[in-house]
Length: 314
Image (cartoon, rainbow, N blue to C red; front, top):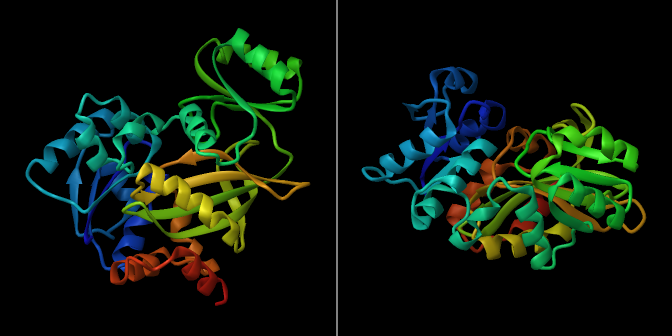
């Protein structure tokens, strides 16, 4: 696994800005596919550049055409728009599995979907808050009353904190009525505690490395995090491996857990199957994804827990 394609659409530059540098430090051959404008954010840490539009659907089609004449060991779709475009694409499922982070095509519906990701986690006995999936405001009202306040209301295909609302009461929910008329929504019990972001790297369905950081500061109440405190959390390794083996994950992901203030249990509340900017910075806390890739390539039986434990001692 040496040849990597990194693609991003119009809003992907903040998730992949320094990812090519991480891959280059691992000794990989990196091709970047992006618009000229996006390329200016990312810099020169790639072996070659393929110009694309900024439209996600067009990029997915361009990747499919590229694969007809070239091959890559790893394709990284750098943002949620590309994941959703892949899920919606008319391409055959086998080709979608080559392009995206899911090797098991029966789970392609999870890409970019908060509701389907949560349903999947619950189905394989990963701990999630009580939840219901709804398609109208009336259903949301009933679900919130049954689950109880405070609760989280999530527009299914949303990201970066947009389309996510914490409601402490029926009055709070009423304020959001205009944004919640039709579509797919996830209603989820709010877990009192600390939000923890986990950046796992999976290769060929195996957990290679992961970081765990408390989200100390975010842009807005539910936005992306801007300050974190990293610490070891070996207890989540089995959960991450369970998810990866079922989905056949291949790539960087960004999972969010709520650590219950009373029990200390971790509830999975978000499962994004694309990288974010933090994968370039976790090396300062002892989790070096470049080194983890190198070790995995040298020995695929290498276990992520051991790597994380060794890194934390530095």
